[in-house]
Every structure is written in C-alpha cells, then in structure tokens.
Length: 483
Image (tube, rainbow, N blue to C red; front, top):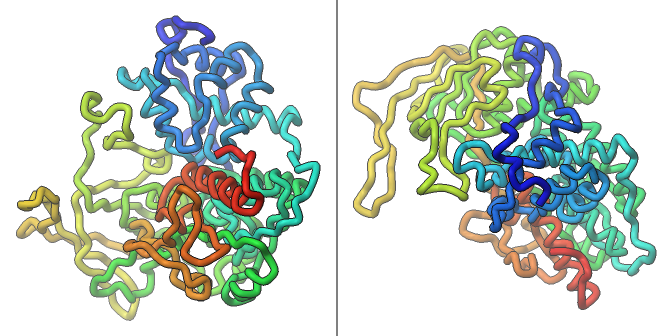
C-alpha cells in the first residue's frame, strides 16, 4: 500500500458544498471537488488493513485499495483504467451512490472512513477532462443482435458490455430521452445530465444503437423483437410506485413523487411546459408541501420543492427515528441504520418520524390538509414489528401539495411484461436467477430493478454487467467479459 501510516497522519476531508442560500438559486450541481494533492492525501489514508472490507460493501466489486494506491502515487490514468475495469459509469455512482463501501471501510470503526466516493468521482472526472476516456469498441463483430429494453443504469451497462464483446445491441426506451431513472428520476442538482449524454456518445461509437419513444409492447411487440434479435434483455426498472390507499387520495394536489421530479427534469432539459407537463404542471411555489416517505426520492422532492420556492416542506416517515450513531459491534461492516441528513434536508424541511397518514382533507376537490397520527412499533409473538396507532395522537398538517415518495413495489405489469410471458416472483418482479439471468421464456433475460426490485444505481450497474456476461456466454458458448 501507499502510505501505511497515512490514516494516522491525515484527517478525513471530503468535498464541500455551496451554502444552501446559494445552491437554492440554481439547478446545477453544487459540489466543490478537492484539489489533486488533497485527493492524493485522502487516498493515502487507505490503510494496509489486510482484509479490505470495502470490497464487501461495493456491489460492482471496485478494487478500492488498488485505485487509492495509484492516486496516492499520482498514477491517475492507471487508477482510471482500474476503476473502469469494474464500473462502467463511475461518474454516476461517484455522485449518487450512498457509498456502502465507506460504511464497510475499516476506518469507519472510528467514524473516519476513507473518502472512497470522492476519490472515485475525481478519478473519472479527471479522466474525462484529460481525454483519457475513449470508446472501447470490439475489433470484430459476432453477428449477434441483442435488444435491450430500458435505458436506465442496468440497460446501459448491459448494452455497453455487449458492444465491447462484439455483439450489436439496440437499446429501446419508451421516453423521449435515454437514461431512465438517471435522466428523469434524479434531480440535476445531484447529477447533471450532460454526464449521461457523453456516455451515450461514447456508446454509440462503440456500436450501441438507441431508439427513443419506443415502448415495447405498444410501439413494437415482444414477438417482433424476438424475431429480429437473437436475445432480448428486460431492463425496464421497477416503476410501479407504492400508493397510499386512504380517504381523500383522489383530491387534486396529491401526486406521485416521480411525476413531480420528472416534470422538473424536463424543464431543465429545455422542454416547454406542454412537453414537460402535458397533463398539468405540478408546482410547489408558495405551497405547504408534505413529502410522505423518508428515502432518497423523498429527499429529492424536498430539494426540488425548495428550489420552487415552497412556503414550507414537511417530510413524514412511518418508521421510528434512527439513532444518531450505530452500534459498531452489531453492524460493521454492514450498512448501518442510523440518522442521516441529506443535502436537500439541510436546505430546509421539518422531519417527523413514526407518523402514519390517515386521510387527505380538502374542499372543492382540492387538498387542504392531511390528518396524521403517531404510531409505535410493537413486537408480536413471532418477533415481527407491527405499527399501532397511539390513542389520542391524531393531528393535522396544512397541505397544498402532497408528494408520495414511499418507494416502488416492482415493475409495471404492462403489455411488455404480458407479451414476454415471463414468470414473476412473489413480489411481482421478473423471475431470473443471478447465475445466468435467464427468465422462464427462451431467449429472454432480465436484470436490474426489473429483476431484483427497487435498489441502488450501483446494483443496477452490477446486474447489467453480469447479465451481459451471461448473454455473451449464451450466444458464444463462452465469455471473456468480466462478471
């Protein structure tokens, strides 16, 4: 390793942000990268720990100590080559991944993990700035054609790996732009979309064909794709949002979070209001906003609402408030349950825990308030926790806009899934084992959230890569692609 005593000599230092008052004025990213010498110093903190537990935390199997050592030794191009050998899109994960690798870092035992996410992001950003990142096309084609349905991180990773193996992948996307969740689910202030555009340009030079406004099952049938392509990969994501089935749900002003976020991303992309919001604009300007759901999507709704100029933002979470600090002896190196505050939450919102929403109240068909109650989680005889309303704890909150950000229950069971005829698992996701990613229908594979359910971008990239390796082996009998 680079500097065995680095972790003793150098304090943890991470990227900094613009002040909330400044970043609320723009939709651009607001992170300040570290200077190269500071990044090298942070990489030097990667101790010679013997067993790199960070490997257990990284779904794409990044060789973290290796690229840290290369950065410390000022071998940035070699660090980039190492990083890209395991991760197709480090600029995405370096911005939006929650960094389970840092939670698993040995130095996290004392709450000072190596800034792995920052180092990863700055390696790939420098690679783009220096012109080191080039198309990696295959010198020879195999003549095999693969249809990849869905252009989120799983579909993109799968298509890129297949192109590099010499196959001819075509990515079908039902929306007007490529990117899936990356394009329309993640706000620009967390990840600007030119990052996607330059990867698309690279992939096109590698031989990937993109088809937008192509909804498989509607624009073209699954059977037609199976007739024209050797393999079909289902990578459509988990887009079916969890609903809130309570009285008043139908009132105007109650929306799914993704509808709200997608509209704003379309505006930021330059779409006029008719294209961005064909069914009516969802605005938080001057409104009392209630966000139901305490995860990343809820946090994105907070940041977007504050940039709209909301009068107030309140975030409700049904689970109890986590502890400020985890019990290391019980959780490390696994992902810990502890209280986290996102940059959007820092920008301004009220957070309330262990709250259930009982009904939406309003008049003239429009939401005006919500009725909530406190709950406590009680263990049953089987040990499972169940929520019970605390008697007399009901209360109301004023609400002009209610955003449902309670996660996703699986893929939409639309014409695409029906025509594919694939078997579903008990959760409603496409059933396909991670050993070969094959579905129950011949020549159809599945990966990403459509197969595993709602998950992280980094898990989608992993599954896309592994699915590509499985497809390559299926088509050619053997595969040289990494798994």
